[in-house]
Length: 317
Image (cartoon, rainbow, N blue to C red; front, top):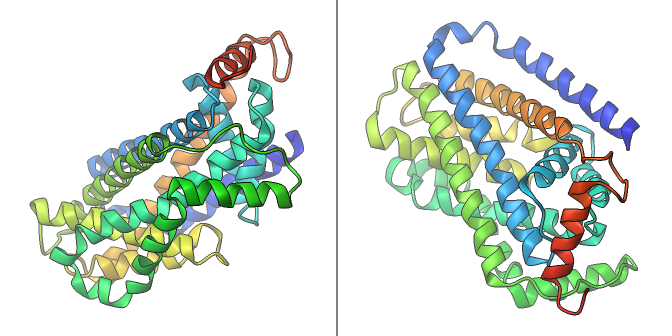
């Protein structure tokens, strides 16, 4: 695990350096206050995703202190910079063991949160873009078509059966109980707030570029554009983190307000800030080591998590 995290960390820094080279000549077009504000809001947006994961994990009967959840989720998240979409889930599974959480529950929570992001992003785009960028929806309708399908798969009775089949195929023990609506809705709620923050971060950048529209209309456009771009990029599985697709959709979605070259500057800076936010939260997670050392039975954090899990699952003492 240490070797994996070292490799992922190196790849994260390389991504940061590469993206800095892409945007450093374009930053003059943006105001310092706008970039700083967008960076802060992006860090908040990324940080909110751990609350979604924690809420879903609680629905599976595993309660974690926020400190422990932050370490597991964000240190694991740097695995997305390693080629192959499965690495964040694998890393989170392994890190969860340090806090007494079964790997199967951690993996299930991570997969559910990934799946929840599609309908949440689609919903944010569907309620904003028709009023400000209908041409974008006409071109990228296929991204929104995935929303009802994924939503149906996330209906708790269906989701529980799918997870049961997957665990049997993987020869893993079944989960202790079904995932209820409360956990699904809580996870979705935090993701929607996160998309709103990403939209606000996009708005703060767009405002500095002399947009053709402003005020509430520009804010709605920014929220919908980012949400649609993220959803489309996520659905193109062959590209890491939707690279290229996300930027292309964002440029088109912002066309009612910005020229293509301006929107491209914004898209590249937004990607850089998201990478910086990943680095910030990974550093925070690494600083939150289990008390007593990772994986040691005497760790206060592990004991707290194990006791909370036992209380949450009927029949365990």
